[in-house]
Image (cartoon, rainbow, N blue to C red; front, top):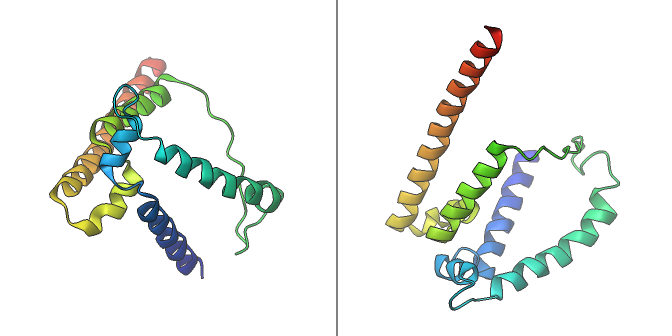
Length: 148
């Protein structure tokens, strides 16, 4: 049941992204282009999504301790603003602004078969793997220095 629910939620999310135009790189770049031909339509999409989400969250999700499928709902503590978080957010924003593709919609766009999307996915996966390897080395060196 959990798998079926996850597949349904993913399909519903992807359908919403497609219908709203949030998967269209030209529209996303138009939204991010504040100094040029700014397209505010995605702001209305996000605002509308928040108007639908927030009442349901505060009335139905936040008061619960378990999901409808019986899984525990774990509160995520606010993380500290550190260099890693700020650097990752800046890199994410830079990539999104340059290409106009967010990783979530990029996965939905795989079905289009566009070479640009396939290149983006390959670059995204490569970046994830590289950062993971680099971060492991940085942590190992930091632990060696603190042990010495």
